Image (tube, rainbow, N blue to C red; front, side):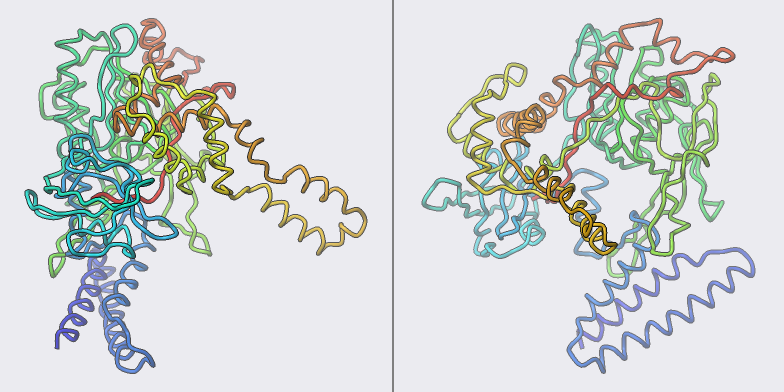
Length: 586
């Protein structure tokens, strides 16, 4: 009986999701509703027939869920269904809060879930848990063969409830048992703020939740009152966005009250909205720079793009991600929710910076970016030219350092994490972040460690050469002379010593970042990344030059080319490398 009720619920939910896209005017609306009704009848009958007659037993919930996910993924990556059991994930996205121990965890390919990064001041760190600890059991539940998602669910819970973790620490023979008390975990969105250079305030914002605006306000007021800053840098690099209202509030701290920040337009005109600054600003005069890169998206692009359109700040870094879509949540039966793209947003100049055109897919289902040649020119409040499509482009572009393949695999293969775990066990303390450096001896030790662990990585050049050789053989070129491939294969033979030495500076920086994080948490990791940061240095240079700053934001003279229209100097490098891999909060 329960299975039948569950099946009917899921089918009904699928029907509701299909109906969610059926709001159209006039005859088109009637025709669309008929198509929805017809297809729901077909789907309803199909599920019943498969469940009844398929040769093997069918898990209706999983089958229908796959159908829902496939339907929504065919629209865009941002329209997502959250069933009741996944609502915590949606809450974390919007509030940055959850009940748990405060740590990132990761699952290894060979099995086991490990503590990767305890949060400063949270139960995991206070209880002495370290990166590299393997979670063997939670209370009486054996977690040896569970996934990171399953372990995450066990770690989360009602604040102030007790739990016992059984962990295995590297290089220790016996497991440990650690008692913790769950806490309401509030992830700070302002990771760090302080003073850089001569009176230049700096704020790093990692995301836009309902707490972000207040955190930025507190940081800004402290910098003005207690540090007497003369200018400000707002760092939005690697900021994936969040709440639109939060972005509007932050822009409102720097421009007059009542200014339009962003407007949204969708299928139903009655739902279109215009967002204006609603509070008195904190400072509308102080010179300001915003740092962005290819991972700055959504709300981060609203803030940077709006301040650019209002000629309130110079932008430094790389072109942003280009997400010009807005999602809202809709209630669904049985405590679920649908996060659905309902509109596009337009910043003050009137442009939409959406890069990918999901409404026109290729025959294979892939999506293409809008080419620069098809973008349009818009103008800032002072008449400076800016373009739509393809994200927000900074006035001062600094070419981002490319990430070698070896760097990605050093992180995802766990060889870096394991080495630093051993290193940290031998070094109880380290100097301050400003003074800490990775020695050449540590670098050589890490290189030897990677070789001992048989570290390998996927070399794209080898793959391409193999494919080329197969095509050449098929077309008969190797019959004439195959020595060229033999020579290339010899040159492209993996050589870990050579590759480590080739990327020594980048690997040392990655190693330093991982080490510092073990002692000074996320704040330390960020401070380490700001060393030799050419994007930050360029922003400080511009803010320290009133003439350059003023000229950049001034009305262009006839025939004058503004920095936003110039090609980036290919000789410059900078920006932090963003490493993205699977990790879960607990």
